[in-house]
Image (cartoon, rainbow, N blue to C red; front, side, top):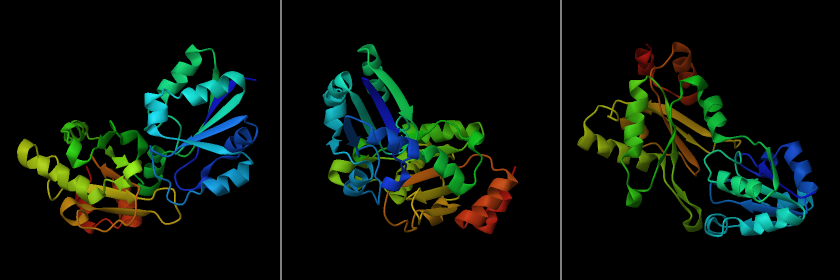
Length: 265
């Protein structure tokens, strides 16, 4: 059989792979993996290779984007290739291009889903998943963009929450912190003056989702901007209109101040 199977690894370590994903990996002729789209804090390549009994070839961003996944496609033309991806294979990645190229070349593709940051932040925060609007990435300051501020503003007008994915440069071991992201957005407020990100705007910071010790902190920008979230990876939520159950959850799970109860609409 010649095919390419995309397998999600989850968010934290090699134990996040599903039983289905592990079975697919064990039966593969060639196994590939990338780590540049997300950081898995407690992941061990050696332990994963021990679990699946296969040698795993690590790929870089260049291998996937500049070389168009050539190594994976070549392997999938002569046997079963498995591509391991942090989180869910097609959430917050550019791997859809690889799947399209595979199908165009007559290679059958399948997906084994993994835990995604999109579902994890809902579970950890207690916010209602159907009230999230467009997701946006906040880049490093040297790649500054007004887009995150604009997306948050648009979502808030509709009463919707915004998930902000924070930039990372895995090869440089650099991860945009929640604190720096808030300072960028707060600084943009001085220019835009749309009352989108002010000192009294409620936000939720999440660190190490999927681990045994995630940090979830809700508060106003002026307070959260100085909070120590520890090690990455990080995510930031800017809530829109809050239901009383959402506020109850933020108070119970994220240490939200009692003033949050005045935000219910």
